[in-house]
Image (cartoon, rainbow, N blue to C red; front, side, top):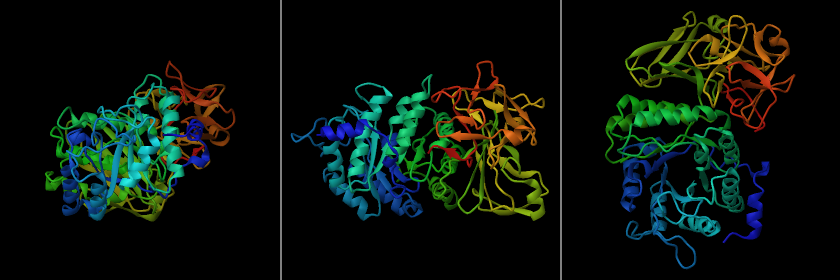
Length: 534
């Protein structure tokens, strides 16, 4: 059982010394989990067969090297000594054998538990047994632990922090390199007030290596897979500031064989998760998926984006009813652009050089721009005299993905500034009056965050946002006097007045006293803008 000393330490979570080491999980994990495909209907053969399929079909060679058990591996009661007991009807050779077998095949074995009194599926959970369970999992050979958050004593942020903190202390004290997947944030998403959600995300990144942040993706064969993907995608877009090497926002599994998916939707699901540098955990019958599905899952160019050592989470350049455009930078200086066609028919889209964060004049001096289409593998030269890069023939719910070779231009973080609660976009106007409005894909909503932390829209490139006695305007003087800095809390703070960018109920953009992760003050900025207070 947990000692009183350990309980006290857990209650004191979280200081800077508690940061999870980047060496444990420097890149997002790739692998398999049973839950979305098989839920509680599991047995030894599912994991042995998944490993064999991954090895024989090229998935292991492509990087999918985790095999994780989810809920329902145990009996319904603990042993007399307090230990969990694996269900010998499901796992006749035992979990230590399974972990050893997976390792012998080149995989990293993972296991599931729950921080409360019962797991989400109604099996014994870890509350009060944390030390016993952790030691058992290590002794059995597991190196990855998913910790769900069902059935805690209450639903408060303080209780979740205290209970999950016990696991943090065990991880700190252990010599094992256990990967800790923290599901606590998911239990605070979707609320009217998102303050606790943001708070849990902040401490989750200090105690673990990845965090499930919102709803479960739809289980096989139920529901509408595309709608489920888009929901989790929308939640994920709000949280880019939290991701860093060693910690990954987790939008849930890749449900490769869900019957409601089209192939283009499956490929978009994969491409978006790759652009996010999100965990790529497959939940499918891997022995039965089609060759065309294996083909896109093993696309080396897209996996390289996912596993890029900057592990930036791509953010929105623009968004409207028909298209989303996302970008991020890569470790070698290349630039990624993804276009998502949300409409019901095939279409083309041109994305300007400025929206990609480039200086058009610098590109023109250099000549051509080299780009690779990551779906086709085709490289092309694009004249810098062109207005930008064009995605041609993107199918409904499909994506175009381009890797632009390191350009002869500095990169300025460019894209949407949006309120992560209302999802309204900061919007400039020819008059200089700045407001919040529905995202429409216009230059008035596309912002450059300069190295000196002056911020201008593409609509008014020579005018920067400024706090004018509490109202936000874009002005020439703002480009000299009005720097802003972006905090891990999601606040965009004026360096002169120390007031926060705020969405007023009438849609006005104002500067107001900074509160604690308030709905009206938490915003997302383009990736690459420095985050203060990490």
